[in-house]
Length: 227
Image (cartoon, rainbow, N blue to C red; front, side, top):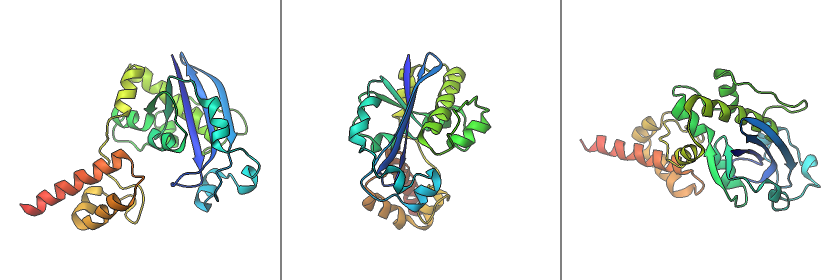
C-alpha cells in the first residue's frame, strides 16, 4: 500500500503555490522524497513569508506549478494535513485524498491539531533530513507521514475507511480567521449572526466544513431566538 504525503507552501490563504513536496509511505517505510520551489506568478504575502521564509528572490527563476506537478502524480492516495487546502491549491490530482486533521480529530479528541502540536502531544517518531525546518513543505511532509503511520497503527483503519472519513463534513466549533479568530462559533452566531451571513455570501473559498459549521450554528441560534 502506497500513500503519497503531500504539502504546499503558498503566498497566503488565497493561494499561489511557492513550494510543493511529498514523501511516500510504502508499507510503513518512507521513500521517494521530492520537493520543488515554484513561481506563483504573484507576490508572496509578508505574513506567509514570515512563516515559511521563502522569499521572492528564491522563486524568481523557478517554474510554475503546472510544469512540476506531473512528477507528483501517480499515487492511489494523497495524504495532507488539512487536505482540503492542499487539494484546492494543486492542479487536478488523480487519486483519493486522506486528511490527517480530520482523522486526528476523530481519533484523538480534545487536542489542538496543528502538525507541530500533534508531533509532541502524540510523541511522534519523526526523523527529518538535515537542513529542513518547520513550515517548509518537505519538513511538514515528514511530520504528517509520522502522524499518518500512528493513526493507522492506533486505529486499524484501512485506506478506504480513512478516505471515506476524510470526505465527511466536520462540525468546527471555533472560527480560525477574521475578526473573531479563535472565538466560539456558537457565541458569534448568537451575538453577530450578520458577520457569519456575510462570510457565507462573500467568501467563495470557504471549506465545506466551514460552510456546514456556520449554517449549523446560525440555524441553532435562530431556533433559540424563536423560542
